[in-house]
Length: 274
Image (cartoon, rainbow, N blue to C red):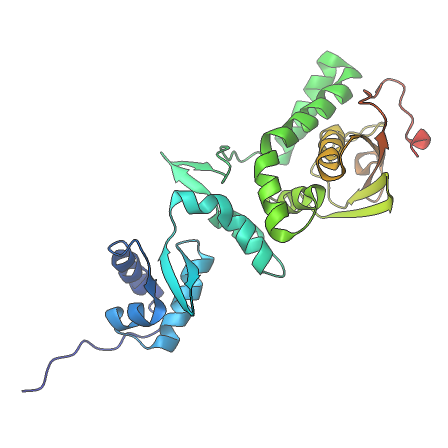
């Protein structure tokens, strides 16, 4: 009597296969090879390889090599802290999707891999925050946002350092890469001299603020702290061209200083920057 066999699955049945793989790997926390997974689910190894790649892109599974074999397992919360850095180091061009699949979900809230809660903040909220803060602080608004940017870098430094280590880049490059992945825009950094950098921000999220003075103080402060992490010592960064003031893009120039000087935002002149 011939044995009754299950019909082979079509490789397009992603939803069904995803459920089967999750159910199977949940019983094998140590991981399984792709060959074994294909055999258990009942599809060809070639089709299974496509599914595993899709599940990996969606942040559902991850893999590690054991000798010549590759073991696949479900992504646990503990894995996500390093998953984004791994994805960046392995791929030519990481995307917002790579950042998105690294997020954690707890109690219907999203958290980044470093434990910081993700909040969706439209750019008009940022522009209104700047406008109303300026109405209270006057010119001191620049110092307020600058110091806020510096503090922010300190809060995310551990995660950025992990990315920098795995991608073999310096801290400031990794920091700007993460900002791009989060939707902050495109950046280009140039080392003019050993103690002089220039950063171009092509699509500033603050660009809708129209002002006769530079408004990207948060970014300037963040860049100064990021440069200190990357190159050591104290750095001072100022915005010398601002899209909010009519320039085609925002441009920052930073230099290393002998002591941690505070910028006098009431009198700063971008033309005096080195």
